[in-house]
Amino acid sequence: MKSKILITGGSGFLGTALLKNPSFNDALSVGRTPPNQEGKFLRITLDAASDYTHILSDIDIIVHAAARAHVMDEVSEDPLQEYRSINTLATLNLAKQAAKKGVKRFIFISSIKVLGENTERDSPFTADCPFNPQDPYSISKAEAEIGLLKLAKNTNMQVVIIRPPLVYGKGVKGNFAKLLKLTSLSIPLPLASIKNKRSMVSIENLVSLVTTCLLHPNAANEVFLVSDDCDLSTPELLNLIAKTGGFRSIVFRFPKNLFRIFLRCVGKMGLYLRLCGSMQVDITHTKNRLDWVPLFSPEDCIKNCWHEKGA
Image (cartoon, rainbow, N blue to C red; front, top):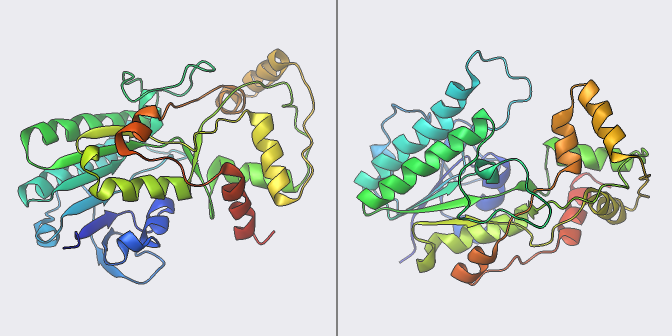
């Protein structure tokens, strides 16, 4: 008998991709905004107080992809509380009610940022690394993880936690979209001297892992890191973006220390860390535990990003 699935965040980047997968053909999508594609949708508010019992009676699996993501122009006087209200308290409220109603499995889309912002090159994060969240978003995700794993110990509901790094693919926004734009404009960038390594995951590979975790017996009460299993330096990534889009990559050598000093002076140290720092994840545990490997190459998936833009 086919498991009945509920997904939150169906209108988001990951949720949209999941609902296109055959495993989610009959899924119930819930949230404030209906997904783009047709299907069963129920408008609800995700918060710490709402009663969800009316929608959980026949559900076997929940994929919780809804979240308060990074807010670039934060205006809240207490950003951590704003993130906690959705990413922690609303998540645990839904999970506790799901456990009481007999939901078998709760899949939580977390973030690699719960382990920190950067790694030393060739010293990747592993699933058993200690928490080291650095901002309100990652703190709220870490607190949700802790609460969910505690819930799993005290109830019969299985919890699966997935920690993606940067996710890219068709319709991507944020920093990856900016790299696509810069490449299409053929703007020279002073990044040829950067020798970092960063892990990413395509939306295709992330969907593949989530669908694997729906029913795999070895996924129960586990934490999984995910990536394309192909770490790239910033110059390598820019060259690949240019190649797949039919553009010329124009990167030139510039002293890394001077680049850091310049960005520090203009208040952009976060940009420096993203462009020049390393952030690698080791997915050995994920591959071994689930007998899973990334199915799609970065080259093919980045090429899909250009197709989305009509390039």
